[in-house]
Length: 337
View 1 (cartoon, rainbow, N blue to C red):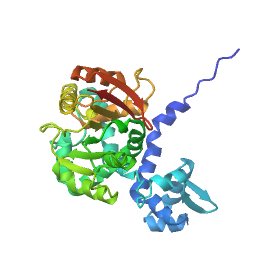
View 2: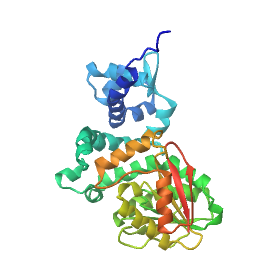
View 3: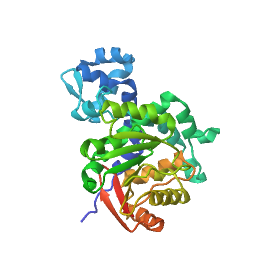
View 4: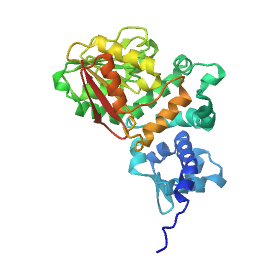
């Protein structure tokens, strides 16, 4: 009996994966999905609106159809239900901010992954003597885009945390490194008995407060200015750290966990949510790739498994810990003091 034919299709598909990725990222950059949210259009009209060269337009649009990002009815192109909901800049569900950041920053930096693997050194602004967070927070426009991108990354996860954590047992919480305020807002919307805070650097305040005000939650959700490395954490019953710990090396991770333990009352809870790597380290590709992204972006950051985080929490003094799946690749680790 002849053996199964082995073909290289999967290898080639993955190797050429950046073709499809960059096609989507350029479509987001051009505002294609926002334009089609207004009305479906034929190739000539859409190319004119987006200021595309006629040579490129038809293949570009049809590639997006083949990739499942657009649909074509007759000669007119339109959004799919997915792109209509998540890639129209006019909708609050827009997640393109994260993709815009991928296009503007990460796409180029990932071209130096081999160098990062060989040197263990970041490949972002740090290579030219700049500090990523310092540069980012000093530029209001870039900061606003970054904070909105974090909302796109966290919204589904925030709703899952609001639904799955036993909030009835608690009355107050604070989201550490809150960005625009998505996590705090989703929790407060779901649980009217809670009061919440968002802690971040003072420059984030106007963006956070505008977002909270737009959701009509300013009476229950407030901003707590501060550097979570240098200053005490808020005294609340539940602390949240989302996409925070993976930015730092193990020593810094442990310092933040110990600070959280010190700030919480007996019975208080810490929620750490990340794209946790699965314990066997062979399934959650997104979590593993995110850890490589931390290699690209940070001096010592890395992602981790639920088992890793539970062990660190116990070393920091938490008595009970558990892992719970959230949305997409994200999970949360809960530690109880």
